[in-house]
Image 1 (spheres, one colour):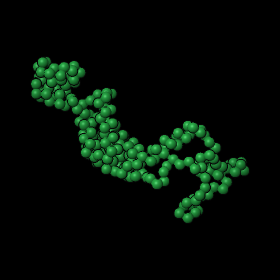
Image 2 (tube, one colour):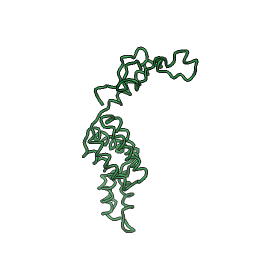
Image 3 (cartoon, one colour):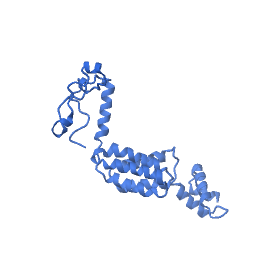
Image 4 (spheres, helix red, strand yellow):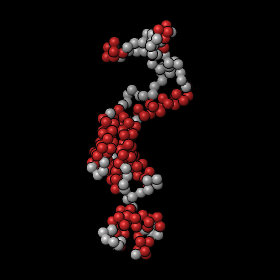
Length: 220
């Protein structure tokens, strides 16, 4: 039996221990049989250390498949993670992030669905929430993609790092006191809803950034 196990795991002591652990769970009798070990090896190859490379490689492949709009690969890596015992909330959490990072306003419904999947996993749990995950994965994979909002945030943060807290225009400032009104806080602010189509030209960015663009208007 020991020689057979060593042969099956190709001499890898760590794999041997994990295979024996799974075989113990799978054993139908008091003693572990060779068939138990063979079945356990197949099962244990799908299980991975949640602090190890396989864990991060699999979730990376999953996210990149979603981003690449490949529903088949996305569902495959979802199945691998579920079979390996991954926490469904971990998977759903990454889906919520991707919905904003990689789909964004190209399909705002994607975030709604991703959050609903996360809540379903919280409230229902395994094994039933696998269905919710699969539905969400298929939707996110086939949704149109845009990272415009994410890129815009990165550009804005970089600008803040470079220029610091630039002076906010007076007309955009809050004026809760009489003194602030005397200092012209809020003066000449144009309330957009008082204008046709709720659109009016006025400066919103600090001086020196008037023509700075972070979010491309021609894209979602």
